[in-house]
Image 1: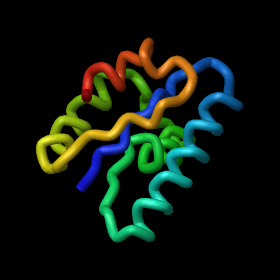
Image 2 (image 1 turned 180 degrees about the horizontal axis):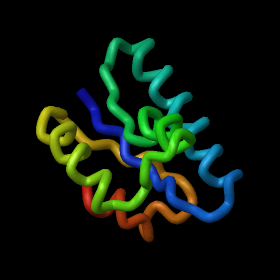
Image 3 (image 1 turned 135 degrees about the horizontal axis):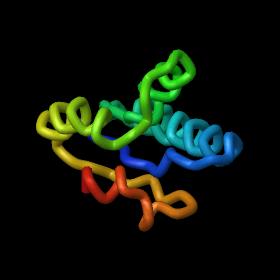
Image 4 (image 1 turned 90 degrees about the vertical axis):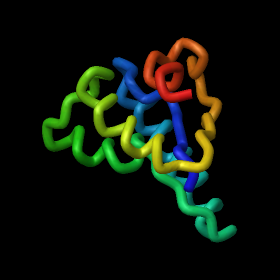
Length: 91
């Protein structure tokens, strides 16, 4: 299983939606190749719309368990990925 990491937290809604869209496309492609992918962006975006916090201290506890069960972490290189605290924490 792959953990798909990508920057997400950004004040501009367009940037966040772009990250979600690109992660979904990556996940779909991986599934065609029969790879299992977990993406906090894909799973968490809908939950954020319902009040889930996006701060690292909250998400880290869930990500840690997923990362321990993944074979590999993959970074989806989007704008500002090097500056992303969340990407840096998981990879």
